[in-house]
Image 1: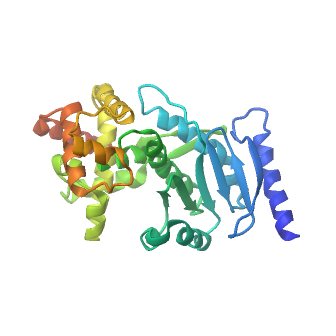
Image 2: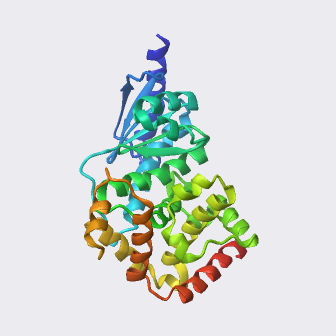
Image 3: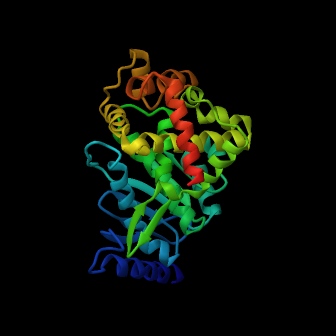
Length: 321
């Protein structure tokens, strides 16, 4: 009886949002019960997502359908022209970490130990984005970040080098909602900006060419917090540099880089193309080094010394403005 009441109560909350005349709060198409092994659940359906959730927080439930659709539009805005997905993306949003861990053990199999090391966040695996409630702001930040990985993994013919994949994902970590509308403001990402400021202050900046060649797995394996902070904050700043610096002078190059990755048109050798195309093959450290640097040279420029000066100056401007 309690399970049935809880489902009806949650559905009523969500449908109230979905039936809003203004359609500003939710892009919800339908809400139905989800027979979950982890607690009473709902399946929320939007134009591009199926969201399976055990959450009973009325505010997040009310907002998450619109948030995911706003993120989808934001992902498309990275490209010269928008694309349309044929099949809905899958998102799992659990009420707490215990449910998330139980699901992760069943869902990821032999990889579960690695995923369970994530302390507060989300992951993308087998095409699904999986997270749990870590507070409204941080939950949406995690969904926005992992949702980018989910989007490009499905639609891009070629996988992205790490600096580009992670840098673009961090553009969606600082959502704001006003009058029911979500927007993404990369300049308000205090967590990455604080990390960048610390990296600059401690003179721990990773040289540009090394940054382009780095695989985050290498950094995480060192278990050095400052190195991890440097890689992610600098990748975030590098993507913003390509999009925003000098009145967007490099924006078209950035979009062309993404467009050609989407269409499988990068000028790379056959071995690199095969690894880039086949997601079942690991994104090796060597592949990341060759492709990460090579693509930057071809699309952005070969004068690393000059570009790095501009990039460092831009990084300093981000943390001093």
